[in-house]
Length: 411
Length: 171
Image (cartoon, rainbow over all chains, first blue to last red; front, side, top):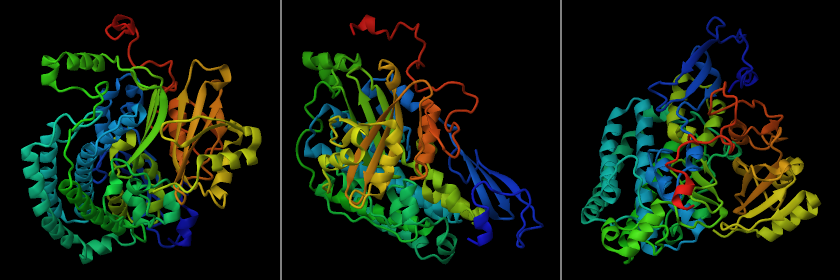
């Protein structure tokens, strides 16, 4: 960034631009968004531009705010899962399972290794789907549409697997508090075996399209960079932080769901630029595959749900035929379950970083207060600092590589 | 990964440095250090933890508010800071009581840039005023809103509805 630009950083942009390298000294105001094909979501950036060069950016968020935290105060625990779907909708199973684990932590429900491993498989599949969307869209924004269509075929296969587990595809509402509603089906086993066999090769083909591609490298290296120090100060987590060279990963720092049992590496970048973010996500997909095959090949025997009848919604067939199940079904649905009072913070490594649930229960039917730590919301505020001084097309690539998901941003 | 610090260690150090400003500790199921502190000293405390040679609490995880309408008059609002020391893998939660009338606290945007939007969000939903914040405006709700929706007096649904009334379910 030139010294001239340094002076005008933030909102201190003058009416007339005095530097020599301007187009007739004119500063234009440009609205990037709220609905713009390049923003991949509804949020607005009011840019001050000198020709193509960005002088400042002012963000407006909240266009799809749906008052999740307020809604959650009126819902019983099992009905909050569908709300979490709609945070980061590219990887909803991670959000769902994170919420289940928060309630289990509060109610001190022990789940078996099998459930842990099943959850790990599903969460890592979700991470792959999330990163595939993000990385293939960076390709689209730099002009490579083919990889996007290829990788959406693979994402489709992951969605087919979700369908086998929970019946839904995008807003999954996967699992229950205390486990899953059903075991992995034979069809799921078929699908995942096929996926583990054929996906790596196709993924490497996609990788070879962009990895050392001259055009792609020129468009992304040095674009939208941030130092590790600034990234930490801005509360970055997840792949964006790791691209800046900080090896913080919730799966390693605060292991949940038996992540300590698996062998995997945490990729880190150096410059924190768009190319690094792309590479970190690519490597994380490979590491996720490693985790999935370890978990799948060592899947312990046992039940697919914990023995926690007061929280785990019983099987529908049992509800019709067994007295016990009917009672617990009624109690859970009517909100008669005694929930311990207390507070708990639980976080999982979501597609975009540390997804936290801060839950306060007063022992009632609903949470007294539930707050989501939404990684997008926290790191998106660094965007103006990352694009000031860059060109307009760079701003678009930076935005897609940060993987800002409007649902998570606005809650 | 094990934490390199214990709750007692940090709490003792905080008590030594700040004395009475550090209130009682509350045990929670997540086992993070969870302590009430005086609202005037939150800023200096976070600054001290940030600069501390050993603790290095240099990551802000979260800021949020909670409204307790049944508490005493000057304790109805609570502000919660989740902090994390990445080097030591140690998490702590600082809480401070604020009054419901003009709740205000010093901003920590000068320590953490991440606090900017988190504080705006807390202002937006709870009406907590952050002194010296660079741009304290609503963030998720529209600017013309004249109340703070996460406070408990604003009910989510029409209170005259009877199909969800607790009395009819034996609660």
